[in-house]
Length: 521
Image (cartoon, rainbow, N blue to C red; front, side):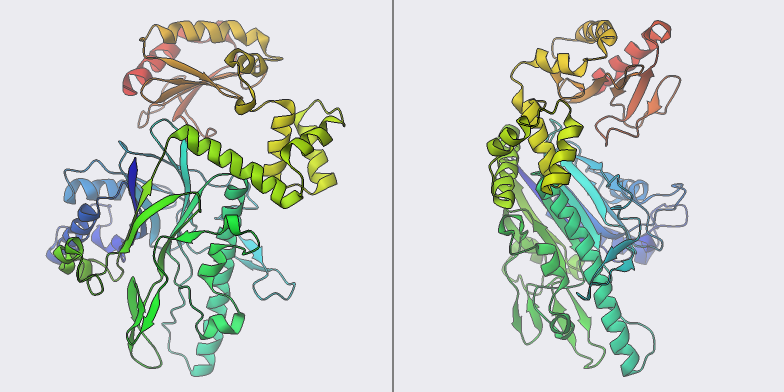
């Protein structure tokens, strides 16, 4: 399956909406909306990261997602785009995305550890002086998980708009230099923080895509030479971990008399007064991802591309940036999962000098019985990161799904110490099976996934005293026993907590499950 991914800085899209979040239909705003819509229709993306999207209010009374859905319904009426946003920025110009729900599922999956969260201050040594300075993202990068329709991960995606190097105040040359250096260090800090998240994903064997307006390119300019690094090269990764280096979907830019080619925008130099072409919008991805047909939709440089030339006017007037698109080819889910697992196993040996089997033997000699004991041992005594320690622990105890050949064994492990919930599980399974012959039960490590054409429920023995039923009913208002789910990272939209099965409203639970089953058809 081929998917079209893209990223587009749409330039102050908030100006295209009134204060209530309704698209403006006055001449100038309507015309620009039509131009942006023509560009998006022509690219026809399955997923499009949007930079400088409409505003999200902190109280969520108006969100970028709501406005984007309304906008696509108005200006791309034949589409079925859904939208997603993340943490609101302190100012404006939100990061968000639109996607086709019949092609992919997109979840907002931010880091749960507040010390690592993109919405919290963070410390970075940007000058290699062994001094960590505090920074904060002005626009928190948008962390998403892209899934196929079978709920399997395609890739993590980070949509970013890192600190602009522009200086717009009246300043003398000395102040200009001071502010330029300050803003460059902030840019380095934000990209270092984003790259650390990429490393977290890659260590777990999960592919990652970084896209957005990075406000920097690949080549060293004066300030990059001054600090011996560039923001984009920070995002690309560490050459000492070549398997983790991200690749650009575009060819290496070349310099000509007008600037860089390919380029996604231009700016007027404050000192020379000249306009200069720059590639500051990027899509970077893991080496395991199969990209093709990457291009900048630039009508000035792509004279021989009929698609681009057909919408030349809209590209020039719709925004001050040109979008980037790429084709991502997806192979079988099982092959992707196997490849990710094998990548992580290979990285374990490369980083530690010992194979997975060797580490399993080392751990077995300690006679640990609990997962947590193994994690503590590997982290404290051998300096393991959590991802590698978790891998070895699962393989030692054979507690991961890949190490268990019998699904009954997974059920037994799930309900160990919670055996009193087994009759409830069997009763739920019997009721759900009666919905239709297309119901599938897929035991995982901690829950059972219930599927039709797509997943519609989770059966979770959460604790010894609480059983949870997760249901997928996107857009359903919480009512009675049905609560909004906040813990499953988007695998389901709602949950029903069963504290005491004897007193639970059984028929209401089954009715909600039946409604989720019907919606999954």
